Image (cartoon, rainbow, N blue to C red):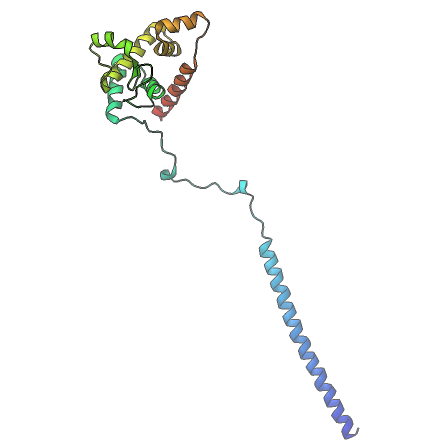
Length: 203
């Protein structure tokens, strides 16, 4: 083998070695990229629980909805409780009447001359005052309303009939009953509020 042939052989060997090195580098790079892509795809495809199967959130006591509050001065609530005990009227029913009549506003006055928390009509002032009850004071207005519903409960036995008499007067309620009407929008609303306040007070 001549000197020129040996040089040519060495050049070929160097080229081959260089190509092998390049091939190894490309193989390593390609394998790393491919491996990384698979990891990323596997992470992205990780299954998620549907919303309805997620464990329920734990609600602390402080986050729970507080019970409904009565929008009435605590002192007047005490008066109402005392009057309900005195006249044997359910406290929840007295609350329901006050809520429907005045939205718990002790200063409410209607266009038809109804006054106070329990909306006592002016035509009833005389005989109530003869009993020592003044409907124009906060306390007296509560006593007047509780006393009146107690009388209707005693006379008509059924709460809804008593409410119709409270709202329309005994004679007005009798005319409704004679016509076959045994509940009104007013009586239905108060009865619904009565059921609500009963459930609240029992909690």
